Length: 204
Image 1 (tube, rainbow, N blue to C red):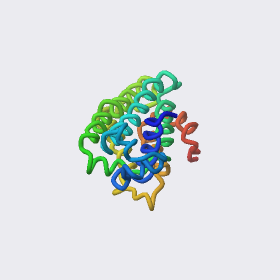
Image 2 (cartoon, helix red, strand yellow):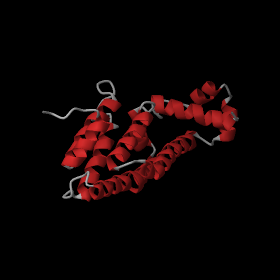
Image 3 (tube, one colour):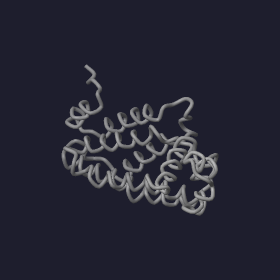
Image 4 (tube, rainbow, N blue to C red):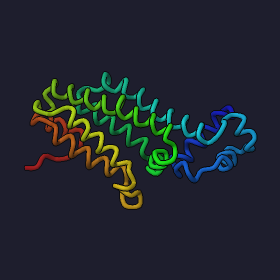
């Protein structure tokens, strides 16, 4: 692995584990086993590392969304695959990282905000349209309202002010809100399909 890749790998792991504020360039250099001088030869400052790390995270999600729709058998499976993808990222992502980027790194946060609208919100709306067409979601859904509601649910799951990390596991929060969301928007036919993906039993 070349030096630049080693630096990015170390920075990405440290930011996701500890947040961005408390991680210094010295910490990253030490973790890589290089000098600060070598680190600065590859990256101008910590901001450049933060920006690139976040861009990689967002681009990875965009690439996944591009293939998920065609690879999924139906709208519910598509949505569940997306949640599995987000859960896999959440396992190695400290919510404090996003909170600190929003608070201390506004330029990087602008990219996150654009991603929320251009990718997340768009994919939720497309999934709702697909589910309605397939008869799995209720036909009377207001797509704009429901999509925004779902987006807010996902954002809240990663917000430590709503679900403090010392009290809640992100994957448990996401499981609960996803079950609530899917069962709420599904038609009777869709609920039967949802049982298979949500691993819940129909109440008798």
